Every structure is written in C-alpha cells, then in structure tokens.
Image 1 (cartoon, rainbow, N blue to C red):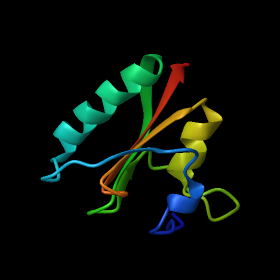
Image 2: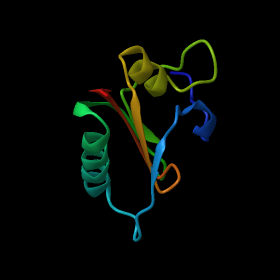
Image 3: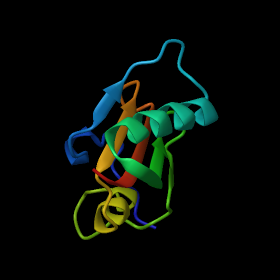
Image 4: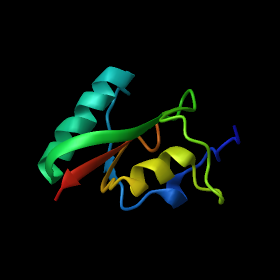
Length: 99
C-alpha cells in the first residue's frame, strides 16, 4: 500500500474546526464529531476517519493517482460532505449527510 502524506489540510474541503482541551480520546472525539455533524445535516453517516497521533485511518483505501489520501478520496466519492477537524488534525471525521 502506498503511504499517504502526513499533513492533509490542503485536501480537506471546508472542514469544521473544533478545539477541545484536554484532547479527547478517540471515542469521545467521535461522539463530538457526530453531534456536530447532526447540527449541520440530516442523519449523518460516518464514511472515513483519521487519527493524527497514530496516523491510523479508515477505510484502508490506497491513495489515488495523486497525493490525496485514499480515505479522503473514498469518502468524497461516496458523497462525503461534512468534514469535522478536531484539534487541528488530531482527529478528522468525514460524514455523508443530507444538508
């Protein structure tokens, strides 16, 4: 699998930025993102996520033909239209919703 770039800010479409102190664990961050997504659209469905501290991401899609990480390409190609960025790329969640 081709490695994706570490900094992904340039690839995110209009992310909603949330600052949390102290930084939440993954499950808490996921809950925060879901609640925010619910305020931005109807019945949001999580398509992809990224954890900056570990570099882990889901889905484990290979990067496309360019530099954009595969998990972002996956989410966008399936209608991902809400991006939540918690603590400046500590966690990123992409949802599909009717907005």
